[in-house]
Length: 126
Image (cartoon, rainbow, N blue to C red; front, side):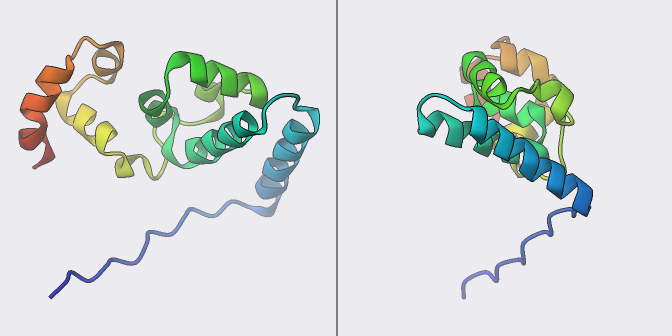
């Protein structure tokens, strides 16, 4: 018998003023944007994910150059705009593994090698 799916966790609500400011920020970003629309779409997607996941997850997902490009499009600095870990950061398997390893910056900088992560993956995933 298949496992019953858990209902999705509710997204923390934002108040009307925050929602309005968010929509206005994105509208202004779109209005001033010049370039390829896939980049704009990706930057907006990064913004929406960053709100819920935090900037540490963004650093795991994107390389520095991509984050800088999207920050420029959005007119933000992700470390100032988002918390280090948002309410859904635990949905990132990589973030959870890095927490178990103990050093976010060592993992991000490459000090913790892929081989070491691969060796410890089963142990860490438990």
